[in-house]
Length: 310
Length: 310
Image (cartoon, rainbow over all chains, first blue to last red; front, top):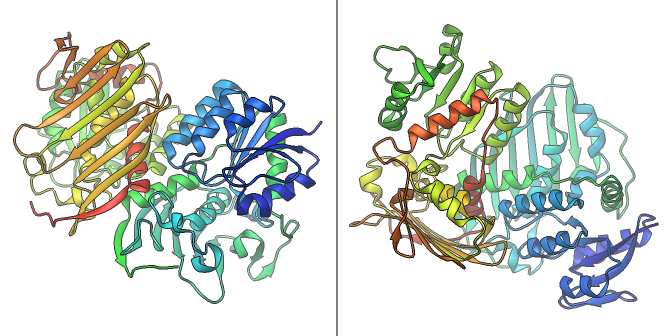
């Protein structure tokens, strides 16, 4: 029996990824949708999660695809009704909210999945496996994209809590925290805030792992031309390059096998994982990527850059 | 048998609090000290924790009173040698480091105590007990002090990672997270950064608890005259005021009984708690106060204020 699922927040990510993946999944059946503006054709639609849960007691799980601010309130409501929850990334507006949700889900015995879609990119499992048992000497993250192409007119991304360049940057951090064998922490950071904005448009971060290996990250939201989402790792056993956001991998220049590509390469396994978590009544809440972002805001140096307009 | 303790970082807080409290404690015996500049009279002194641990294998526990940047490396070293660790507040430079230390301590079976001295202020346990079972309607934190009096010339406090007004503010947060019956999370914040500094000198924070009650905080580092470290809580069963940093308490205007006052009112019970944790092989690592600080840096609005000079 597929799990009866509702979706909350029917925006771009829901239409591009969640809805087609749910439609194709043997594990889930879309039972209802809630959205402030638009519904989903052929599915019972509501304007709030509270109405949805009152009207559809058969709903067993919910995917929260609304913006992070306000998402924790919906998650708390779902958990209090015994409904399993998938959170889009980042899992909430604050780390305190995520911690609270994790405790509530555990107490209620429901599954909470703080999802990081980039961890399901085709080459990430192979990269993780290859790095196990190897000693990292250095790593470099290069995450450079053009915000005007990927987030046209999305003013919220530069508002307080919008995270700016960390909105894509946290995807890189979600991969690196998944594949590296050692934990790491930020030593120094430099964040460039446009003079007219409340979130950074570029960042340079210097992390260090538990053995002292440097992990550098360069995040840029004003990068035109070839877009770059690359992670390079130098180890005692060779050099791994994970490129295109985790979808391709080479070891010492030779291409390695990766999982299936395609438009839903990340979200199909992501939903399969959610189904497994529900079946096993487990949660998966790893705040490590989000915590690195908060650390960067807390201890990073702030530099003012030119004003930004879309 | 008292626990053989070493102290690392012999600065103002070590001399004012840690050393006299350890000297008076039946639970601990000061065995060695490490400090970059100065030692402790009559005690074996070293310039680094590594030298100290090599030379003094009898040391069972260590208090880390160095500045937060770099403290995690010392903590990791101590844990790897099976030595129990007390961390001054804040527990490290980043949340990622604290998480890493907690995992390592658990794996090694040693005690890690991320201490929050304000939680041991005389009236805090009574305030917590009084609030249990009551419904909070609103709370207000007023933490206003003169940085020039309390941190004269301490340039590091306004450097990246120095936390600025959150250095005292986290003490308020450590009390509120301890005494309130519900968790809470930041909704909006406004942080004032002096034009020539990298950490805020004032902050207004609007939290909300899980039942929707507002918790406001006003932090000010430029407050002359009467210094204020007050927490007011309106409940369904009366109004609690915790003043003077947690040392005095009233309920509906009537003074309530508090624990012992005196120059070491916080650190004496703090060390008694550390001794209990060691005896029971438990850790006490609550990052909630520090996490609220990181959340404030991450989602708070930034406003530029006048340049600051000591």
